[in-house]
Length: 336
Image (cartoon, rainbow, N blue to C red; front, side, top):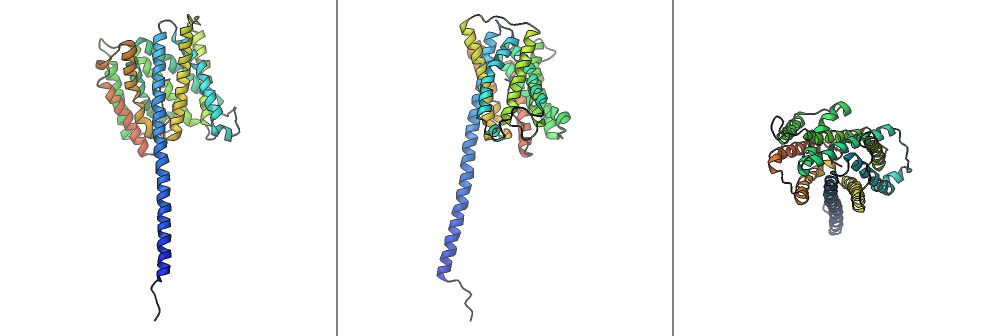
């Protein structure tokens, strides 16, 4: 009779092979799990640090805004902000891997993004000098809603019911904070909305670049465009005012470097994790701005911000949730 059983030796080999395969599988799972979690933690730290640097930049702008026109502050921001942009480009592995090219086919689009940023900077910096830091900062967080709306005509995206609901909720929050038709309404509250529109346009236009163009090079073109745009606004409006003291020079340099290195932090964060996963952490910029405004300028606009701020955050979070579900990655928008 034929022996259909397996010998003990064969069984031992089979068990050993099975254990080896299970160990290999577990090792791969651990390798895929832990680096991702470490990368995500690092991404959150980079993002929070970048947002804090942007808000500290806002403190300097508000402090200097009484003595210098915001057009000049934006120009200094972009001059000194070029240093981190050049550093990002020089350290970009993607740029080196693609031959360290400088000229791109869509160079006009690259500079146009910079002009959008320059216009946004003018609106945001002016709003900081005319409003509470936290109020101006909070209103710029309508950007995810504006990106959703701009993606329809520019990127031909289809927007479903949930994201239209987010648009409605976000704008409801903005209207509550702005309070049009009441005594507390100020036309200056429109400036952060204009800033958000400029930043959102620059963000949506990123999707129009050719795939091979390195991110660092796109950022470099935007930095150059923003510099030329801010200088054009400066010399066609107020003109240049002499810097009064060494302290002011140091503050102007710090302002530009803070903004530039904040952009570096954002780029580093969004290389390590998906934008849809990190977007909820962007809203830490609101309490950061509130605390800094309270410390440096004795501002505490609770009544203005509540409950509108919750609706703005809810609208942005709803959009982030839908993008995560649909695997859509939208670049970050932070007022710079």
